[in-house]
Length: 286
Image (cartoon, rainbow, N blue to C red; front, side):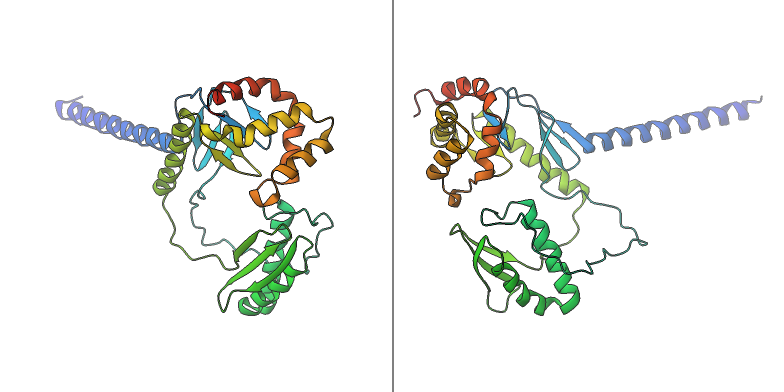
């Protein structure tokens, strides 16, 4: 092999190695964007649908999904998908959905049975009658539900004002606002900011209740919600007594529901794990 051939081989090899290094670097950067984990925190208290998660708490993110100790907590924004020019639109339901039998007076805006029914009913009416008439018809749909006292369209807008049997007032937008597609980097920034908020608040001894209801509070607020729950779990002879006690203390207008209280009772055996931590956090603050 001549000198020119040797020189060419060396240059080719160096170029190839550089390209491979850049590829590995890009893959490493993509992996960093895909997931991130924050240092563990020993303070605070976390509950998920009434289940206690013992500290230390490790907050992590996989794409847009946020986890604490491996349990899914939130996804503040959808992960951008590659546009498929061959993708087809979702076909609206061809049968008019009936009110589910398990949608009753105790149903709340957070319950899956309500969310699914309203979503399918709206799609059906909008497809069959058009958006404007569909919104007017949705007023009657809301009014027909056993958990809703009244509903009316807000002027000529795309929103409907609802008064629940619980007394809570809600304004529901029937047509989602149009927004520009957000980038992967923007989703990551929003998700990371929320993760850092969780970490910071836990470090400050705040508590979090994820699920129904979602509630968070500072250390001074432990006595307002968590202490009454712990006392009722200790003193109630059965689940119905516990639910009655808690419902009287925290009416639905506070965001707590019978379903939420039952979820705490379901995990009442965990009380010895979190009550000592609660007393420690509350010391000198009740």
